[in-house]
Image 1: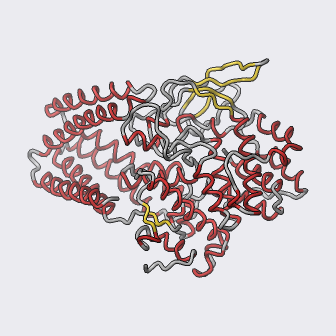
Image 2: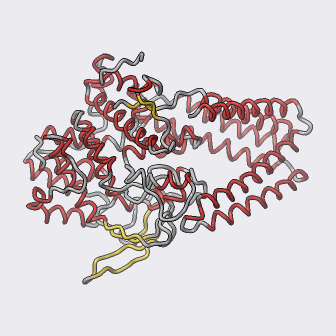
Image 3: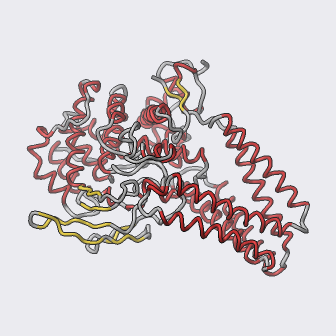
Length: 179
Length: 389
């Protein structure tokens, strides 16, 4: 990774951490902020797809599909804005699907690693935690209907991904070549 | 290509090139190990993870597709399974640098990189030789796909027809793809398993020939399709012909490696040595079956008069695990690891110096000293360098 890219990763990570902390402490507007983030995500994803079409996918067989996707994603961004008035169940399902999927993959990976005689316990526990976390989300969202809890979960995810970025930014990545 | 070609056919090619039975077994074992030496496998041995030559399906699903993850994937798949045909190639149309860099990673036979791979193997042990044969064979089977996740290069659409020889021409039959990994391919109905469509450029679904399923791995099949990069030009893939060339080129390369690897040049095939066995080989190659191992095994045993032991991934496990640290490089797996690090280092350097960072950064030891991933210290030390430099 070039120095500039490392710096960029670091700045994005630090901004994400700050953002995650602000979210935790500003619970009242938390749900609105989370929906805004998802809305912005779709908006920028739509723009990104459009640029991707112009730079690369237009040369590809069936590349028009990417163009259509970009327009639909942009529309989805606008649609998400309307979600503020809808119950937080939709957001819950979105977060839940990510957690549960990650958990299942971690458990499968740990089992695979175990079969090969490798390290597996940490990954297995990690997967279980994700799944338990998803269960907690269901209880919180559906039975308790506590939106602040959801916002906190989202913030924890943001902070976690920020730390992964920081870790990646400091890793040595060059492959040594001997002539 | 599968174990049938990478293990048993390689054994046959090595024997025809003049190696002894034991040497043939070691070469074939190293060839097949390339498809199994994943980070999971290496972690079970406490071996350097940078020596991984493949990624398991779940490993891929677990890999982050951020820049570092993508570079790691590209290093592994471009170095060992999809050796780029031409790192200076330009598409016929005007395109962005991002597109061009991916286009240049499209795999194909008889490349400069192949020549360098064989010559590099000439400096190593039988493990390097086996590894080079894996890479060589895959340049034929995996051609037209790139060893990096890319929708714009590796995607395919529903336009896929299997070609059956009939009279002077071919009869076409539409192929169907499904996405159930656990279900074996149905040869009778021409139903094959492929990866799911994903419109994410860097999705692992778009790595290598995933979108075309295992078709490139079957020696008997002929088919036509529209590659994503091909500007709607139909491409006919004739696997029996490609596998025949791969086999003859392996015999030629192995002979060079026995004598003088520097003499290896691309586009040469030792058809003369293979000719007496042409009927048998063509019969095996064109036989419609999912696994040709038993046929290749019988052919190999007929050639050498010795039994070929089935591949056992744990064969050299204990030798490596219980070797003292200073002796690990002398074990079978230790030598394989060194060969893998050397190959990955060479291919990454070539891609990097072509102006593409898709496989990551390459730090030239002779110019900059040791600046990079710690695992490569082992390679530096083995080649007589000073890792404190």
